[in-house]
Length: 327
Image (cartoon, rainbow, N blue to C red; front, top):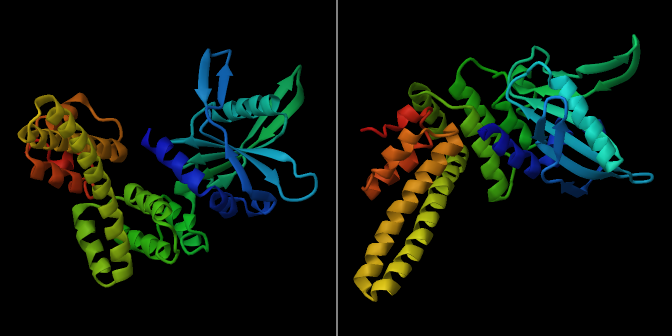
């Protein structure tokens, strides 16, 4: 799922900012100079015969005293589902047994729960007696008031505000406000790209809203340039991949035929092939898994300019249908 993949990368890049934003008291106890993300932590539900891979597990150390090791477990949920709280309890027990340390469990939810920030509880009872109680922290982004977060002194805040309740009924105004708040922070290109990608992906605009949004950009050069840099980076990534694959393909054909003509032809073929793949990758990143029909349509495109146009169109299209692949 696009949300899982994207937010795993985002939380790894802004792990300290995430804890400071939602759990400042606990974050103050963590030494963020020693953070290690554990790969492929799995949980086996013997009763159901399921094996699950946990979304994000970070190993940290406390700042004071004995500097104990703690695991911060963040699970991403597209929607609040029945049985999720017992499953979080199962994850907690598995992690504590496996690593023999404390675990701080968090669920980041991308649908409304009606609570915003809360601590669901799971109780285990035997023979009518309570024997264990488990609580975790749940953050339902769509329930949170974006106006309380967008201006926080934390670069992650305006990006996540794009998924919260907007502070205005006009989506284009809210998007502009999120980007304006984000422009205050001076970040390296890679980290800024992730935050911009969050706002652009999770706060899409209709064509009419996009037209009004451009009116805001016309009056704000800083935000306009920041957004332009983001879109250019996406296109540049596709172009570089195309050039690299084109060169490799060209060299292969050139060596085989021993002719300059063969090398040029190989570069052109490789460029088209790479741009088709870039277009498919960008569509998968924005819209999720693509059907076979989309792959067939893209594979049939032979015009390089047409491919370039479609690559740029990914930036503004809200749905695969708006790409206009069949035109």
